[in-house]
Length: 238
Ligand SMILES: Cc1cc2nc3c(=O)[nH]c(=O)nc-3n(C[C@H](O)[C@H](O)[C@H](O)COP(=O)(O)OP(=O)(O)OC[C@H]3O[C@@H](n4cnc5c(N)ncnc54)[C@H](O)[C@@H]3O)c2cc1C
Image 1: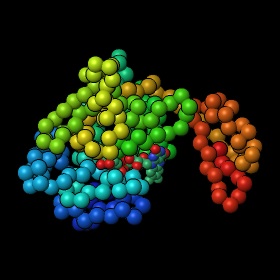
Image 2: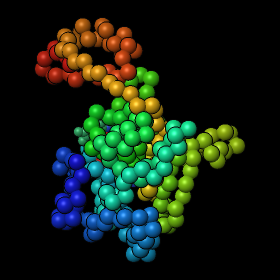
Image 3: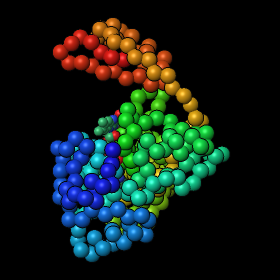
């Protein structure tokens, strides 16, 4: 889980597991889009690289800040709810564990998420974080519109499916879909939500062969299904 005190009190930065580390020159926590634009504009003039970090839960170095580290920890929460269209606009720094409670107030829920909830919505979207469920897409798949600050400090917006090229492709939307922070810093994300639902979890241990034999049927019979394999044994937990 992101810790604001660690961010503020340590010069160092590390990812969740601690094997990607950095000592950025600055660690900043803007509270508004304008403040973020100012950071990007100043960094551009100073020829410094800016890297935005969510909860630093990526195992790779994709969130490693080289020069200026930015956290959107102070840019969280719901911005707008369109009940009819079932679309909710969130500030990009909002953590997944906050979203469920916020959406519940409106009778909505996220369609799907990964198997933990500490990531930020922007980090999850930017890396294609996925859950399980043969009928369900990734977190990025739920995004219908993006707002972001680009490399010049300008604010951009895009709605999925807009600005098609002459072949009917939505190149910008496709690039934004999973962008690893390469196109700029997301400030708002509009998500397609679903009606609030409940889940019941069942867990069983199988021999590998038994699990494999019923994999197809089980994965199609349930909204979600996942396996944990235990190397060195012939067991799996479903
Ligand atoms: C215990 C654990 C369990 C996990 N489970 C799953 C799982 O079930 N399924 C799965 O698919 N993944 C899983 N992951 C991976 C995790 O979901 C991703 O690495 C995700 O990106 C982490 O989100 P974050 O907010 O920590 O982003 P970070 O790791 O901080 O950043 C990820 C990327 O997003 C970019 N980024 C962050 N914020 C913004 C922004 N505002 N604008 C633009 N770019 C931005 C960063 O620059 C970086 O490139 C798991 C990770 C851990 C540690």
